[in-house]
Image (cartoon, rainbow, N blue to C red; front, side, top):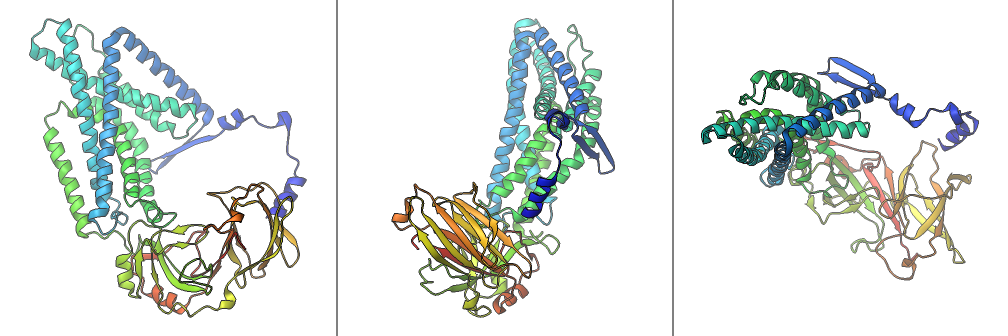
Length: 561
């Protein structure tokens, strides 16, 4: 691939100078596209989106500026308090969701009990998110009502009861208008950064604002305010829901589906993190979309009924997942697991000494313990955070391990070797290491960049340069090479290492090796075959490009070689 790209790059005649499009032209030609309930596709260019968004933003700013200037300090204070109510909505909604996310792993067999039945997130996270949003906005509503009552008590000579009613109605209107103000901010930010999904902010701003202006803004100062009309809510939310419902549902389903492979390093993330991610998404969507609806609820007579129904929905969902009536995984939506026969020839573990040690490792990228799976497999697996394995591309921080029949199915001749052929300590220390991956044509090598400044890799058989000397990137102090070849791929390599001049670890012992190698062999050993045959029906093998095959050999080269 490298040779092909170099050849194409040298032969291609790319236009230069004024013949190339500017970045602005390229950006303006980007497509904005979305569907409506999966039926109709809408496509237009970024240039049209910029014109449309700028027009709406300018008109909205003009309307808001005029309104605040005419209203004076009371209008500005009312807007600030109504925006505070939205902040409180977010705060309480996320707080309630975080509490649920923390509790679920403690009372359920799986920390993500809704994977096979995504509809459960409505009750588990939608209900507490709604209660939190309503609670937060209600606090903001009370503060706003108290402020407006104080303003009206100084202005009008009306009975206290009438002043209280006026304050309630005006607070309701300000809460509704605060929703459009927040969507205006989101539209402005999305338009500035040219975010394609800014069309969502556009429809959630324009439609409710137009409905309010058409049905409610005919009010004159001489008249007393009236409750918001129901038709304002229905007309204002019809188009936004039509445009965004499908997108929000699919995004939620995507996040839920991502829970089965959340852990890059199995056991490396808190069990509540996946719950909080899906819960936070639902909370943010509810707070932004229900800000118009909740402004109606405060003056309705159905507050207690709505709260009670939401609590019942949450309690019922919690009972379902805690009792196990609905299993967290199924054959169609399985838990992602890996079963790997590991031959550890690093010599770093006390029990390994100088001889290779082997075992079968069971781990999962899905959050949660594996005790239930290990019990059903019944092969002597011990699970815990002490069963760690460094697979070079990732680290198993929680897994299960068994030594049953782990010495068969592999030979010591399969273990890769790393031999230091030369080590020159001059002005710049250089070392040449010969790597033999034996029968493996799929391997991963990690180079310690805290010690090594640069390197080059060659095919030892024909001296073909695979990786040249150049600036190398690193992640957490390691540069990782992944190799996967065909049937005739090379297995013997020469690695030339150029040490850092400021390297200090060469003078004392260190736990971090110089090189880490993992070779993968697509072979099923007897113990692996038995484990795979006993996997529960809700488990499925899941492998990424960085995942090992069912047989993996580990080899290290220490700094003090």
